[in-house]
Amino acid sequence: NAGVTQTPKFQVLKTGQSMTLQCAQDMNHEYMSWYRQDPGMGLRLIHYSVGAGITDQGEVPNGYNVSRSTTEDFPLRLLSAAPSQTSVYFCASRDGGQQYFGPGTRLTVT
Amino acid sequence: GENVEQHPSTLSVQEGDSAVIKCTYSDSASNYFPWYKQELGKRPQLIIDIRSNVGEKKDQRIAVTLNKTAKHFSLHITETQPEDSAVYFCAAIFSSNTGKLIFGQGTTLQVKP
Image: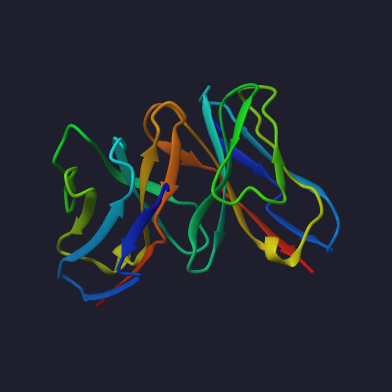
């Protein structure tokens, strides 16, 4: 099993550009989530999903969209990138217990 | 609201000493409490977890205690070693139906040799 995979690993965007961060898992987990990590702020939940076709907002959803068309994939879309969205983004999946994280995407918005 | 508070934000101990990190949570219905360790530049990794029907759980040098009445739980690391140096995060499930996992702000642990 590959576990949770994310692409790209690094990305630089200009203010106003849009992009999609990809996330996939091969463990057949129902729950998937996106977090952002900033120094001193911990891991903050952006959006999460409890299964295909079902998504909901987390703690910091503004500026981000998600969809869950399959159990495996949970992409995160930045609609119009802003410098405040410079961060490390982690995708995660879990069954009823342990949550597994992807390797992260380091995003810089200039 | 849904909140997890974690203290301290930084902790420095001598090798061989014990380290304790404490967390409180806001939702009395929360029933799953994991702890994650994150080394520099890497993803968070689960080190131990506890469910609400258990008061304490141990795994070698690591233990977690849970007080549901007070809504707080703690991580205890005994006989600390330099390789324990990392950022530690506590978390709590808010609403078992959604699996919504909220994290504390993190504790940077430094173990001095």
